[in-house]
Length: 332
Ligand SMILES: NC(=O)c1ccc[n+]([C@@H]2O[C@H](COP(=O)([O-])OP(=O)(O)OC[C@H]3O[C@@H](n4cnc5c(N)ncnc54)[C@H](O)[C@@H]3O)[C@@H](O)[C@H]2O)c1
Image 1 (cartoon, rainbow, N blue to C red):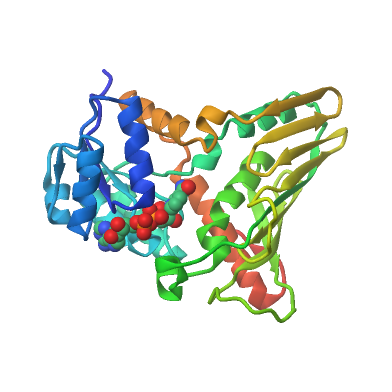
Image 2: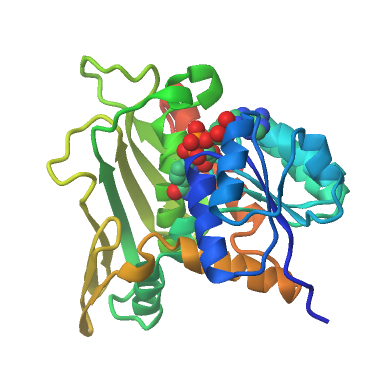
């Protein structure tokens, strides 16, 4: 028996909640949306913009409400663990924004609560749902470039970091932890293998930055299938083309070159192929929402699994540990 459409309550009504609520409303006209924010003006604003059913004045009222099936946590990640544990205790299914939390201690609390109260939990990792990702995976699976040997992902742009993103306490890490998790997800998804070790390098060059924590790293990752990944991630390096960059997958029989965000992809190997990103859903948000709702209604597990997200988070932690140890750190 399929489930009914879930009632969804956003906890945290800022920029990303607004985007998800907009997409949900576009895709599912009759879904009940609820809103809670510590700033009542923000929840009221989203309710009126997206035909919400109700705002709550306290999170407890949202967690007690029988009309709320899914708690969609869209606060800064410093608050994710506390809210997710309370939601699990109340028997609510949980979707968290990325990054899942600030550190593995908080991640473990989420994992334990999800297990104990037997609720569903996933992270809204939209990169997994970008159309070009499945296009590349399909080309690799068809053997067009033979076996992937090296995967190289490049993402850099001098970003303006402000608000809670400039607070080291709320961040719990640096650029790799907050923004880089998307790119770790992309690398791991394209490698289609478990990351085993990670080592990060930071240039020993003095420079003036107003970002009060790590803003640029190169991370090398070894995968279980023998392939090697490299992620260059920076919120500091200037980019004339606003974050546009080139990434590559080098295989035994060919090379895939793609614009890092998915604007275009070129496959050169046993066959030649070119494709463009899907511009009607370039960031994958709509496909992700569609998949979460369909899987919820048909009682299928959500994608990504919590395990996959935890592995990727451990990859980030291993990279940070390696900055201190100077050696590749194990991811587990
Ligand atoms: N997937 C993506 O592409 C993407 C893009 C942007 C942000 N994000 C992630 O989404 C999350 C939120 O980012 P944002 O840009 O929307 O931030 P934001 O600052 O625009 O919004 C955060 C909102 O949370 C509210 N809030 C803070 N603490 C709260 C609490 N304890 N309970 C309830 N509400 C609380 C704030 O009042 C604010 O309205 C972060 O984890 C961020 O990394 C993801």
